[in-house]
Image 1 (cartoon, rainbow over the protein chains, first blue to last red):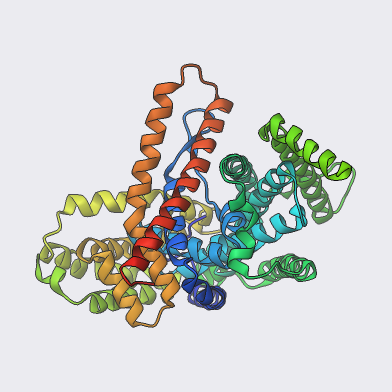
Image 2 (cartoon, one colour):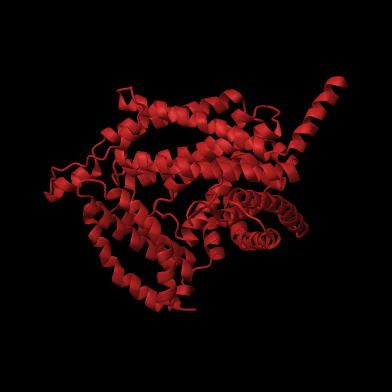
Length: 324
Length: 191
């Protein structure tokens, strides 16, 4: 998902850089009071943790391997402002040291993997968790949040590429979504594995993660509004981006190379539901079913991961509470 | 230590950023102008006495990402041309960045960022990240080797589970390390 240099137009790159600066500035402002209470070392060393965790490769089929991005995981472990600063630091370091993603595209990359990833991941996690989650619910929430964060980041990345005319939305959107729906499953599994083991070793780290960094629990309505707003922006921006004149058509006109062959590559039909004519509606329905199925899978995963002993102890605690 | 190494970090950072931003703002049909930057960049590389092999191998590290992103551009009408132009642009940006990184230390860069009034929290996080990422990477590698030594049977699910467990354990160790670092910083009179 790291966009290299040269693929974004100046307007898009600068616009997203400004948005990222705003978000990051707000997070830093939120955190400045935390510094005296000793969160600065935690943030720095956690950033090193995310960095190290991204270097651990998980085997996928046929010799290939994938790795964690970790924005939803960081959101669950550190709270929203902390996760945002940590992810941004990691992305900036990757850009400068490993040349992973460009300098010009740094704002857009921080926006996709930091801002969008953390906000969507954290909001999903908090919404699904509720007030006093059981371990199973916590693990399922973080898995689903990881998937959602990956998908949202891919969506926004596809939007940026098509807005700057590097690729058509009808090509880049299905390609990015298809690949990242799979990558997101890996992200979900790894995030839930990590949270399950943190729950086993030091559960209190997860319980006060939000409170330490945020000061207070976010209001549910605010979380819902943020999530709804981001979905609405994504839905509204996508058709606009497609209707906007392609940067490429200008290029071809300028060069007098007006090609008559337009690529008939619109893989929307692959995602269609038979019996429904409208391509957009069918794709939307397919996406909804896929998301619901994935949510079910996350729950099954959480049931498999949280040890039975924990559930027995929990049941005992409930019994003790109700009897005492 | 060449003259390029000794040049102030702010100057180098500014020059590299200006070059990359300028190249980024170049419209795709003029992307070939960017090739004119190649000789001065190579001359600087020669002056900095960074081995060309190091520079190229680091450059190759980022190259697959360029290809992946460029392949998306190939699907447009006249896409080959656009894809190649984008590729040339980003390859030169990558080279500039490599030159900057191989001649400037991260500590200097972070100090420059702090002088530019980048928020202190972010600067501290970046500084600590560079300091501890090697340590934690080593710790992850040790845990992995220990696990490989202990486990006999293996399936993909077990492997994933063990890796996830060790990452969780790594986070727990990270937090206790952060607590130690914080108290050490405080006892020396730091933040």
